[in-house]
Image 1 (tube, helix red, strand yellow):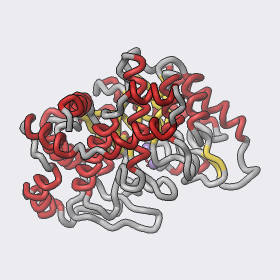
Image 2: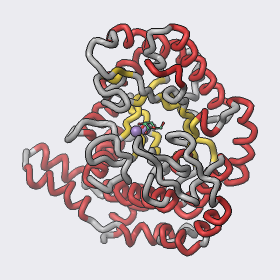
Image 3: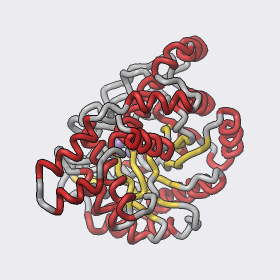
Length: 395
Ligand code: AFD
Ligand code: MN
Ligand code: MN
């Protein structure tokens, strides 16, 4: 590999950070049941401890996304505990995720519920979440709604749109200059006829309507089959409205599979659009890279390390695209030449340089192998055995 290429990989790796999800360390399941893992985290302390392992072994996961009802059941009263856990484990609180889908009152929706009192309750929960974020110095509040309907004729789609706009605008007045509302979209599940924020266009419209501190969050598992995700990423970048990602992969639906396990080239193309935008604009895109996975079958920590390593590898590959060569070939409509610029970068084995990058920073060259050798899994399995319970669908 040429020295210049290695230098670009090092620069890319130095800039790349990815957030861990607290819910990725605890037992979860599908609607058909859960396979309990004895080593799964059952407390927020254990979630921080597991996140610490991943960060110490990879060096690029300094923050942990928190789910308000699961990680701060006491709301603002739990903030001091989170602060002390963050100091103890060396991982800071990351994005704050309100829970607008588990409470029985949300049966017919949260922000989109026809009952004004439910909408007001949901708004208050998100306001509490903004306050928690401010106390924790967390910038992003991630808004994902399960709201929708299962049958034609059971919901007034335009009324629900208006109720969302009203609540999002009201919530936005609570957000201070340092914070952001990230509006996430998902085409279906759990609603199967319509979802109130079903695609990136609806999320974009809601974010714009809410106010200047709202952006769109792209969950890579939340798209229809064969949707061109990098195209909408390029649009959101051009519009200055891309807030961040929830990374996972999908084969059929919102499967929360390991990033890049099904289509690594798509993840590379997403990273390419971002890095090309940064090269052309001469600016750093202000994007929150976050993992959203909670494996039912893979080992929780092993799968998290695997995702981080995959993300680094694909980001490093994307950093090798020769932009001048690409622009020239595109300008001359030399299709094979232009396509080959991307394919050459994607085909480059960047792992040796990544291993050197890790070693040079005092990190294990193979974080997965280091984790397997560390004895941490055996230790927590013994400590936690019997405590995992089929509590919540996600917690
Ligand atoms: C589920 C939802 C959505 C949300 C995540 C965390 O589909 O992706 O961001 O839970 O709340 O995966
Ligand atoms: Mn998500
Ligand atoms: Mn999801």
